[in-house]
Length: 173
Image 1 (cartoon, helix red, strand yellow):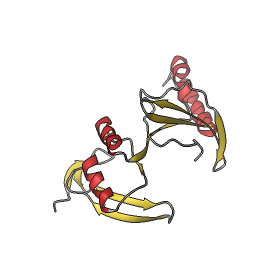
Image 2: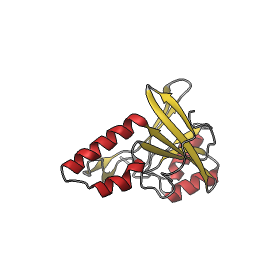
Image 3: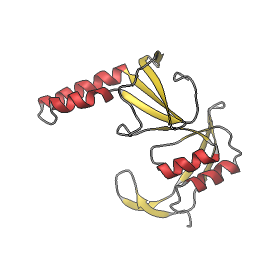
Image 4: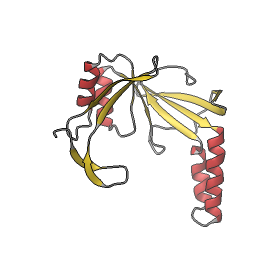
C-alpha cells in the first residue's frame, strides 16, 4: 500500500503506520471527512490539499507537532488556526496578568492574552489543576526527587495552558 510508511508511534516503536485526516463539524457534532494521507507525509501541503477537497472555511485546530515552518506557511495561506503551545515555549509570558475569569465544566478558569508578532497567545489557568500540580510537586520535594528551588522557579506555570492563534476573540469563547 502507498499509504503505509514506517514510523515511530507514541510508545517509540518503529511500525508501519497510516496518517489520517479527519474533519469534524462543530455545528453538527459529527465527523464530515476521513481520508488516509499518502506515505509519511505530515505537512502543510497535504493538509492544504485535504482542506481544498472539502472546501474548508473554518478554524484549524492543530496539535503541537506542527513546526514553525509549517505554521509560517499556514499563516501565509490565510487559514485561521488555534494551536496549544508546549509549556516551555519562548512566546509564553507566565507573569502576564489574567484579566478575566469564567467557569468551565465546574472548573474555575482565569484567562488573559497577549498580542505578539501578529498572533494572539491565550493563557488559561485552571485553579484546580494549579492546586493538583502544586501538591504533586511538593510530594516530589518530600521524596527528594525535586527541590524547593525548582518549585519556586516553576510554580508560575502550574495550572496554565497557552494557545497560539491568529483568531482574535474573547478567551472564554
